[in-house]
Every structure is written in C-alpha cells, then in structure tokens.
Length: 111
Image (cartoon, rainbow, N blue to C red; front, side, top):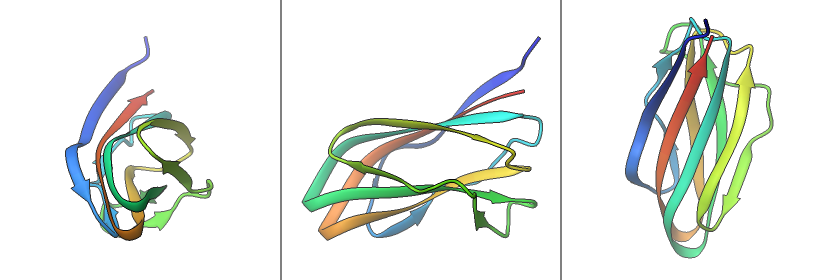
C-alpha cells in the first residue's frame, strides 16, 4: 500500500521580493507534487516565479534541475517532482513594482 502526506507550507502568506518556504523532509517519498495558489496580488504587474529546491540535510540548498514555474494573476499552479533526495522547499520571487502576492503552498508526497 502506498503512503501519502499533504503538508501546508504557507497559508494565506503575503510575500514580496525573494522568499523561501520552510523546508520539509520527505526522504521516504518517491514523488511529490507542489500546489501554489495565488489568492490575491497587488502591484503592477504582480508575477510570481518559483522553483523547487533540494537539500541533503535541510540546511544547504540548490535548485532542482527542473525549469522555474511562473504565475501571473490568481489561481492554482501545480507540478510534480521526482528524484529529489531528502528535503524539499520552494524558492520564489515576486516580480513587479511594489508587488506582493498572498499565497498558499501545499506539498503532497507519496511513496
């Protein structure tokens, strides 16, 4: 039987400029799926770029080899990640003059 877990890493969090989520240990998992929901955006234009980061220890980070994901406007974006090692987090950047976004970030992992 497969095991699964969904973690909420950010809930109704307002971000500006560069940011990173809290790390999450998923060494037991073989695959994961990110869900990033933009709830509101302010500034012109408020665009969000995010990339999966991986770590062997939860301290030192590097970008996963996948391409960054971009959102513009409100809504939900999702993508999968495999072969990621032990720890995952998202690194992101809000683009735009005085821009900010309110978002939710979920990490769903399964073995």
